[in-house]
Length: 364
Image 1 (tube, one colour):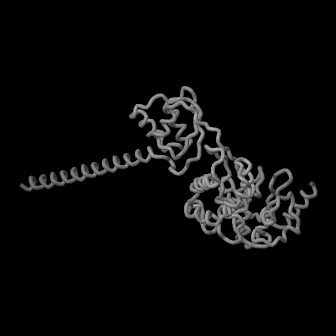
Image 2 (cartoon, rainbow, N blue to C red):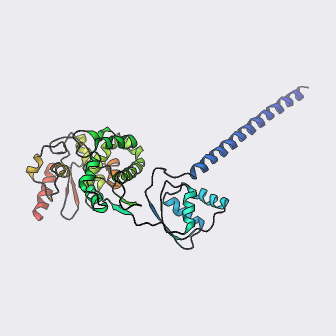
Image 3 (cartoon, rainbow, N blue to C red):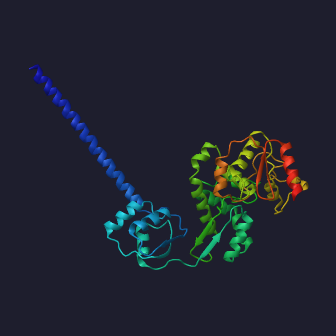
């Protein structure tokens, strides 16, 4: 009798365990199915509904669906090559054509497939705009004017329009803040228009379209470094300001991380940054050499007079300089000097710096 009761209780426990396991498995299956559904649904949607920047893609003759899927994913035109392949198979899409295409990230997977099946070359002769690293707002305005037919003054007028800037701050809050409206800042968007090559369908897109395409690029680049920025306890404005100083001081051979370390070391020591490009920016001139009289220019951008970072960026920085600003080298250097050959010499003391400076100035 005792054994029967024991086995009955044991069987009940087993049944309960089996029931719990079955329920858990069922719930897990539902969760997996639900997760898969939303993942696939998301993968079929545009990568970025607001990004209409043309992206060039070349489909060679003989490309398989797998090849096309991988190329689209590499160009970030689709979210998942795997979903693309299964979607094409499920929908029985065939007849992809080789050719040169310009797609964009606001297109859905179905839109992209429709274009690639037409065989029509969508490579339009619109506007190609190249903004080099280290360029300033006035230079960018000149490039836009030269390529589009707008007047430089017209471009600058829009870039300085307070209502327009305020609207942009609301539209791009992840990168723009009221910091750019500081009264000491010469151009609100200085340093925020990312250096890259841009393509537009029209030969003369609106100034707003050009500017916002650049801002979206900045937004996309900086999104990759959000965690690093938080670890450095920096605002976007501070990051782009520091990055611009590194960009303007760096030569082709320069170690940007070491340059960054010098700036951070001087900030920690309470020393002025004393970087010549800020003086030139304050002067509004491009000169091969900065003289002692230039260092006296009264401007909040003059880092020989004022300690800390200048009010804002002095140029647009490339990604290498942004990374350097977030990941500076660990050094105890306080000075650096660019030689005529493009090398950069780092020193710890003013005495060492002056000795190196005299040596290389003497060689000029």
